[in-house]
Amino acid sequence: MLDRIRSRFRRKPSGKTLSPDNIPQHVAIIMDGNGRWAKSRGLPRVAGHHSGMKAVKRITMAADRLGIKYLTLYAFSTENWKRPKSEVDFLMKLPQEFLAIELEELIANNVQVRMMGYKEELPPHTLQAVETAMERTAGNTGLVLNFALNYGSRKEMMDTVRQLCDEAAKGQLEPDKLTEADFESRLLSGGMPDPDLLIRTSGELRISNFMMWQLAYSELWFTEVYWPEFSEEHFLEAVSEYQRRARRYGGL
Ligand code: V0D
Image 1: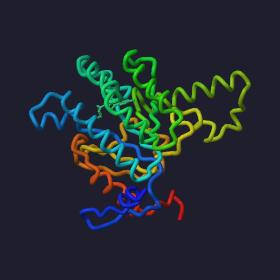
Image 2: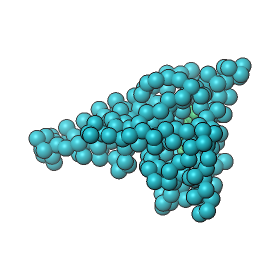
Image 3: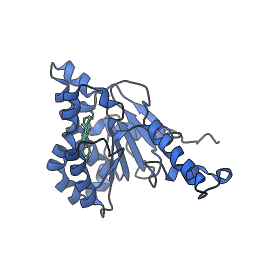
Image 4: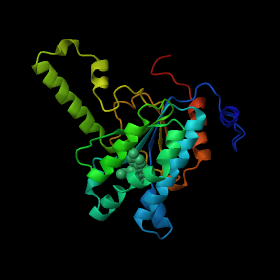
């Protein structure tokens, strides 16, 4: 417990401290720059993906120590299937490898593993590993570690629209009375709060089909740093900047 309090007040290079209140409840991250990191070192792209996996562990533990409740990581998009088959095959082995190494520690830390995305297209070995992890951590009450895996925001919204139309056609809902809450609860993120903070690494300044509905009022924070080099310090810097910004929700 002391450790937890200390880490929340840890001094940063800037000399600023994080406030223990106003910790973002939900942080989402676009983990970009793995291939570029590898290229800059003369390594194959897959070496970058592998190194990026280490950063996942690092930032998960940092988020847990800060008392963040939800961490959503964009691991694989519905567009990523267009990459070379050899790269996709490699990527699809990472969940198993990650969980083989980290699941016991995640369980010991009361972390709940979840997946947000379309399960149908995933190779059975990938889905099996993720589902086992979700089952084994379903009762945990600590950090929710939510992997966006085969996720795309337009598909998510279109599926939600289809489902609502279907329910309307069956007479289960009245279009006139449809609310934002009806829409939200049917998204893949249903039941989770919207992200308070979005982080994107590696210098691209785009949302790239990630949680477009849910990010409507989120603070956005971008860094040039490649994901494999993203450190706890960088993460604390993003949270510190989040705390500095006034959150006005388009109101006062
Ligand atoms: C590669 C950087 C962990 C982004 C991080 C299949 C690209 C490392 C997972 C993971 C990937 C997913 C689900 C789960 C446990 C771990 C992961 C993918 C890529 C895509 F339950 N890292 N990671 N999944 N990379």
